[in-house]
Length: 543
Image (tube, rainbow, N blue to C red; front, side):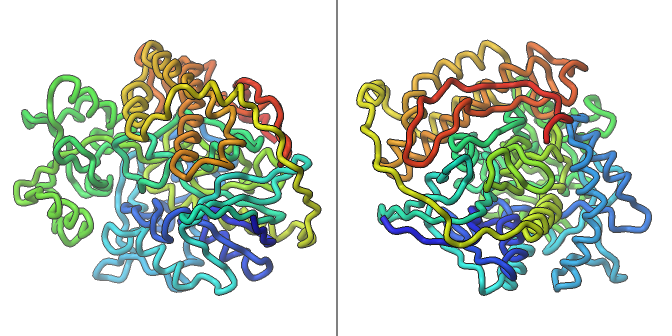
């Protein structure tokens, strides 16, 4: 097995990964790994735009308040302040470097409106193709000093002396390679593909979160998965996103009886926070109704939303009827690897940024179009932080220890065959989806416990299994942690709704559930894996 040395390893291919790598490349030797192609990420799929208080009648304070309100005040306020205060400056810097956003006939920015915002502040590009435009612009400017390796999956984080010092990868030919660096950055996105209905790229399974957990890093807020209310629904399947910006331009939800049900659910009606709208649609389904997005009031729909028009046409939806069938789908993960605003995790040498990280900026429910702004602001914050640190010598002191004997008794417990990804997705949607309750969560936990021997033997199994099986095991582990968190939070807040505890409790305000292995492990030396340690702790005490 070969090994290669770098200054910085970045895992992921989306906006957070590329921005961070580009910022660091002037002073460090950077390599990027992505398990698919460079375009297989959520950033390319982002439609709505970038939320930013860039207009003179707006202010970062208003954006700050909207973010806290949508997040049900579970947010870390310092992270929200950094996001909203620094956002305009960072966005203007991108514009000065050539990134172009849509403008109106007078040359002013064409600002969109989306749910839970008090102002029109959504900058968009290519109508509804903001993510694609941003990614293509950034890829064209990516420093030649950055090496991007496609179709090579990171399957292990190397840890020695409580310091993350590299990764092991596995390519499609079955070749394993060790890469070492003083800094490892996870920018892999969230975990939407744990569910059958999702706006995410199919590669976004949350594997990096499980890898970080196995390496000794802390995870948090795993119970908060945001479901986007309006995925295009065709023949019982969710086939693509219908941006919230469509409702911002006048579209509204109705059921099969042409009733505008959001009129009676929330003061902001169709532009209520996403968790509210998703639950309302879920209730309509429960009542036996179908749900449609009525676009009759949207001016020049096909021009304003070319990507959505193409998506509908592809799947045989007649836009002349003005009704788009929709269903909620897993969209954005507020939970992730526990970090501060500089991207530092609880494990030295390991950093996380973007949706893979959880610095608390989104609270219990992300405000629409804050995700692209998050990548822009916190990628810069992470890069600035790393550039201020003293660069460690290229020659890391790493000694590979001979592998210990495989515990056959442990492997003999693997009597239950691994489930398919479709089975995992079905169970997660059924019991840990939009609406949850204790009975269903316990059923899910009991099912997931059948596969815990795989999770406990993951270090050994990583050496002998293929990519699909390794990823499945990490999906199972993350699902187990999500289920545990959902059981522990006996209240409803934002994207986490318990039908048996439907009220937000003051005693749970700003309390985070942390997930950390009691004992870490050094590379090449296996220790007994303790049961998961879940600790509720006030968010203000972190760092």
